[in-house]
Image (cartoon, rainbow, N blue to C red; front, top):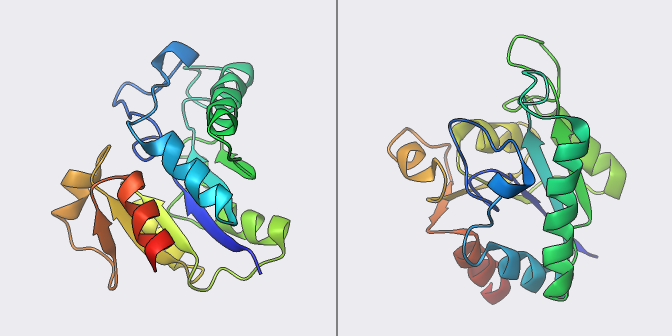
Length: 178
């Protein structure tokens, strides 16, 4: 059976920005993240990305721009011999009361349905509490990275059982060794 991992995007895979990542030029991979995804993929992991993208609702960028960022992510991972199997995003703003905006778990249920896999124990990697909370609501195992907003998040009360790593590469090392 293939193993599944669910990754947040901004702050985990690529650099985050309080001003939003609004263009392909602003989409900058965090050192080691692309290689980490490729290594997990090569070792049989299914890679899913679940990301809030309220910049769409706010009019900071359009669907085509977001797609160009995701195309770049997939191309970079492919160049390293891996693949991103699924990307799901919430296009809504915080006041839209949707089910998909983390910390709600709609994106996670979509991912589970897509792969027809249970989410119990599936690692969810994020840099914010809402990433971890969304995953924990459906039984995922919380992994916090210190990249992005993770260092600030680490100072908060973390969900029980949260494992903390410096970055996505360290998460991949841990998962591939255990």
